[in-house]
Picture 1 (tube, chains in turn red, purple):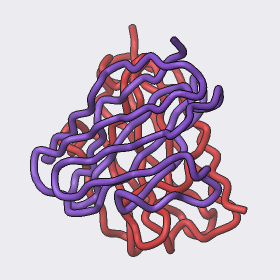
Picture 2 (tube, helix red, strand yellow):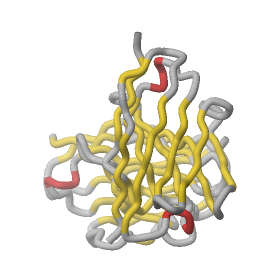
Picture 3 (cartoon, rainbow over the protein chains, first blue to last red):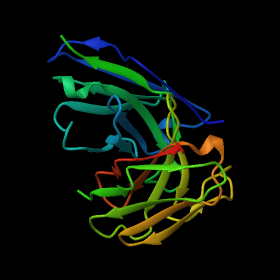
Picture 4 (cartoon, each protein chain N blue to C red):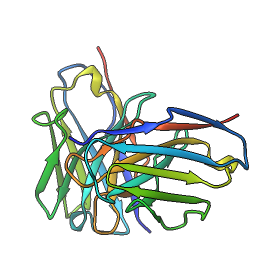
Length: 118
Length: 107
């Protein structure tokens, strides 16, 4: 059974950094399209980034240059390094795996909360 | 970026009633359109992909239609577990983009 568990969310000051982790089980993280999606409080879903075929990546304009997606195949884990955080980055961050040939998200973690505030 | 626009923002309906949510894309996405359902405090759940294919385990009362720029999700007879927020999402182009959501609430 596919399972995703995020961790690393915390309260951080504006301008600070944080690294989120997403551990996969029941499948191989590095063999799938893996994305990060966030949801600000009371708001909708925003796709942020994807990693696929090992090291190819895409980013949303809102995080390009500040966030970095990566994976560790030995730990079956996906990461999101978040730098230069802003208050508007406050959200629940979900990792998600594409289902089938890709593009839509068939599997989601439970999310981890990031709060950016002084 | 392809902008996805959903309507209505809120839909009030009673259990047993039919509910229809619309999604419009700013550019053609062919049939590369998915629908999700999210209950409060939970992660989204995939309902539909390729515009009209139900995901594994999704009840037959859910149906999807459309292609190009106009899409519809229909729930033929609302059940209590169907209330929540519905999102459409395109996967034709990067970045993947979601609609703003439609809240289906009990009348």
